[in-house]
Length: 180
Image (cartoon, rainbow, N blue to C red; front, side, top):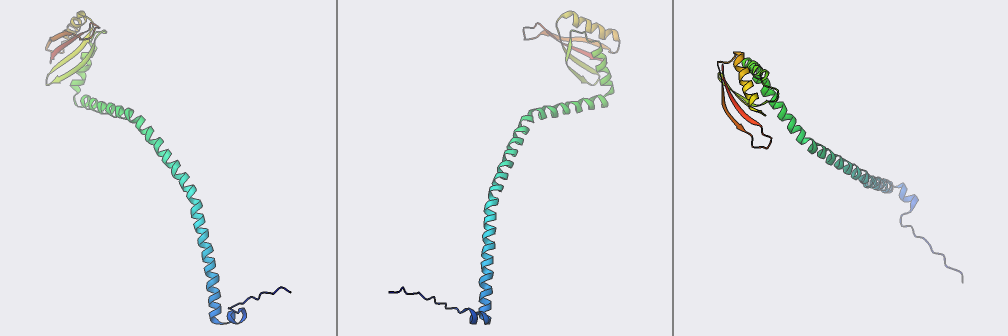
C-alpha cells in the first residue's frame, strides 16, 4: 500500500489575499510588529547586559567613596589642630597690631628673662602686667627681677608669689607684677 500524502491547507491564499487592500495592510502590520518585537528584544538584551557594567561601576564608585571618607577621617585631627593654630595666630596678630605697647613690653620682658627660665603666661590689665614663669632655681628669679628693675621701663616690679611645682623635677613657679 502506498503511503498517503498529506495535503497542506492554506486558509489565506497568497495571491488573491495579498492583492487586496486588507491583505496588504495585514502583511505590513505583521512584518512591522515582527520588527518591533525584534527591536524590543534587542533593547531588553542591551539593558540586561549593561546592568553588569553599571553594577561594576557602582561598586567601584562606592569603594572610592569609602577610601576618600577614610582619608578625610584620618586628616580630621590634623585639620582641627591646624584650624586651632590659625585661630591662635589670628588672636596673636590682633593683639600685636592693635596693642603696640603690649607687644613692645612683651619683647622687653622676654629679653630680660634668664636662659634657664621660661614664661608660662603673661596677662595685661590696663597699665599693669602679671608674668607667670617657671625656673629651676631662686637665683634666676632674683636675676629676672633685678633685670626688670634695672631697665627702668616699669614703675614697680614686685614678686607676687612663688611655689614649687607638683612634679618631681624641682622647678619653681613664680608670679611677678609689673606696673608701667
